[in-house]
Length: 230
Image 1 (cartoon, helix red, strand yellow):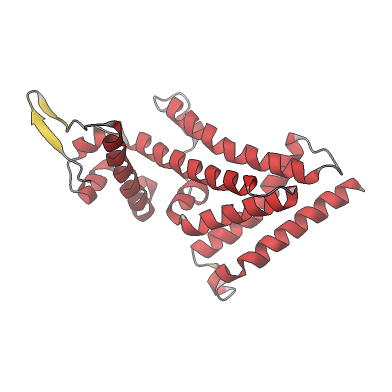
Image 2 (cartoon, rainbow, N blue to C red):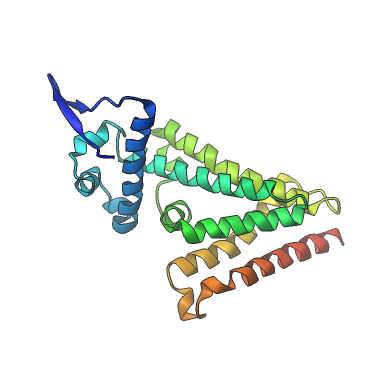
């Protein structure tokens, strides 16, 4: 869909979309191109002017859909975490046994990291603005909404970890979060190292040992929970 505007008395205004679906389609195209451009230019190098040039429109046209660079950036993050949450939730619901649920979720997470590289870089790898950076600014509410979506992913993993620990032990939220930090660090290191090609200097075709890596992580989880009971 072409992004365009029309001339009216008083200046340039966005072409009136016939329905919400058309508006969302235009915003989606802007978001997708912005994500690609940020991954090329970096957050600091990204600008609405560069995006407009990429889209073949005037920068003022993009401002009709997104208030500023930060709103667009936060919309990208929100979309990424929504997609990740949906993937992990589907994985969670696909299994009945807690450990199998957790395995399915970890696999969904790794798949997201491998297939949605541009999203993953922005969400987890790069040093980019987070919620705390927007506190006290006009974008605080928008940033908070993004944080809420991101936290849904964490809470889903908390739930899965606690269910995996039962009935042997009852983990509190703090303990479950500790395990998430620990095991996420292992999985994230594998995804990031594969995506930036660093692991290929250590091990040939590191993407092919995905099952082995996930298996070791699960084995470690079982061992940690078993030892905690003793």
